[in-house]
Image (tube, rainbow, N blue to C red; front, side, top):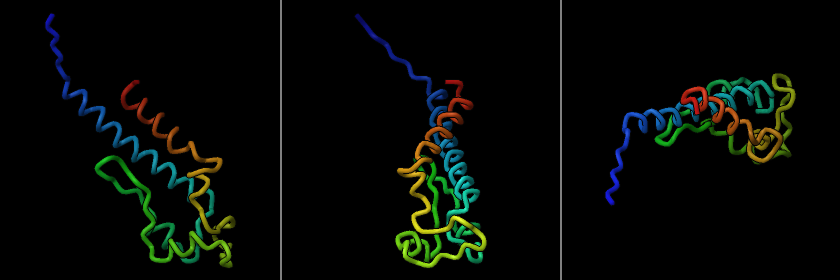
Amino acid sequence: MDVEIKFDYKAIAMLENAVKESAMTAMEQVESDLISSATMPFDTGDMQNNQTFVAKTEDGAILVTGSPQARRLYYHPEYNFYHGHNKNSGAAWLEPYISGDKKDLAKEAFEADFKRRTGV
């Protein structure tokens, strides 16, 4: 008994591209929600509006905050955070997306976009 397997490389490439684009869309959704939730520390707006962005990677996408003060602010809830621009600002602003009530946001955004792109 002979078995012959043929791969549809065009379809595989389309699925791989859909994964990457859906990952980008999901991370953009998280970034948008992060900004609208007003939880990131905001004084002049540079860290939130210019230094936080979605970057493409070989495997998909990541949310990056490239400002030098981000790590220090993120891990120190004892700081006296300014609440003039972002009323909910404080440390650990990504925790709702990691283990809190918004932990499924990226997954659900990815699934919806992937389904829209591929029909599966």
